Image (cartoon, rainbow, N blue to C red; front, side):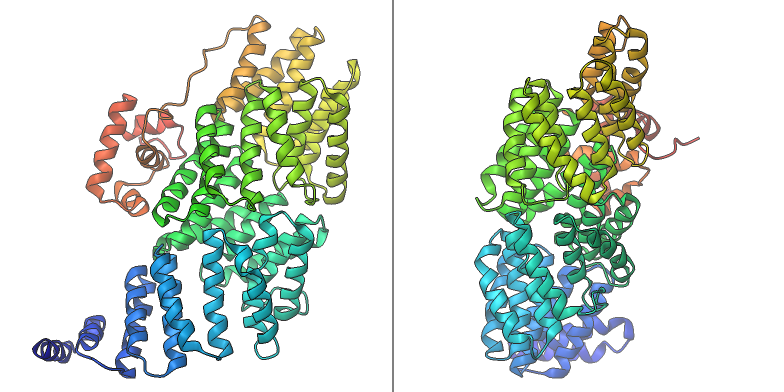
Length: 591
């Protein structure tokens, strides 16, 4: 050992070039036995350089070694906690928690250091689905820290909202967020140092049906964009999706996804991909959502946290429901329900919604009623109808089951939510269901009003569903010529989105009218390619090079080309041009 230390010291002395600063720091660290602040500072600088070039594991390793070489208790605890934070972003939660145990012991009675450790523990609780376990501790610590450090107290208290949010307890979520805003932003505007507090306040207000929620969300955009990607933009994107600000939502979520890829933050990447998949579903692009959901599921599996896996499978269940893949939807839903805790009603609702939606699309109204009713019951405290848009689908399922009185009661609640929030997409869906309940000619003006409402919001699949219902009504009213146009338009949208079960319904209606249509066919690749092959094929269809795809899926270029070879063989194509055409990608076809 003594000789080895001398060798490292000699190598450190030889590393005099600025480009060898990282090498010098590590040789010094290997030549040092006890605490040495100068070497620790050099390693912190190395960690910062690693962060800038996207080396998240190198950053975490350097911070951890810097903490080991730090003598004073408080800075050692802070560096240890910082290393734990980066290790959790890299997916190494068990190692991260071991470092937090050391940091907590070092922190002692130092409130600032304890708050830092507790904040990271609370984040771990979110990832592991145990937010209820730390709720009381967060509230108590925030109360003790508030007089000394309002911003630090607000940061940890904001994490406490995850416990009531998982239960869809809107009142308790709003109460926590109001306390956070009182600590971090008493003037009611987003705090530049901690915009997440305002983002979470916006979410709570939106859930409660308060118009101020959407206004605060829009105000948060510029503040969140000034920060390095840390999840705030992805959180904000979810709120903006609920309030139908789809362009802003895309801008926000793309920022966090791109930022996470740049630094290798897989926890943030999975978080952002899940929210982008939900946005793509609203925008009628389920194949793009499928690619994001598959990648999100792969990240969740790598992190090996049951709650994170459950949330990713719930997203996959919804995507496959929209694609009309009932068996896949059921399999993903089963795994999500098996893994999510009993008090995680948020994941449970999303799973039941997916199962109900695929049942409704497949003509299984009884199953749809059962699943959607359970989701609807769990969300009674949520005023905003666009969060998980269950109500209109439940009403339609009840109509198709011959229960108009129950359907009207559901629609009355939906209409009240629309009147409070003004959501255009939900208003269109409500009018569609009112048309289904109407008798005779009274349905016509309601369908027309629904389609007019659809014109104000970019939700093509919802519009196609209204066209399908209108066409069915026209055919049954013996207005066969009038029925063909809306049915053909609906079929075109469903086929473009690869929503197989909805397309099957539209095709059946056209066949009854005596109009010939091509037989339904599953999208090339779905069910044929493995998840890894699908992700690579879809990325190639969007115009990405093999090198760009390799960086995205964390494989070598050679391995990506190997998978593309399998894709070509399975799909019967021989070039990227043919692949783009077959998958319907967004890339321009090469000349």
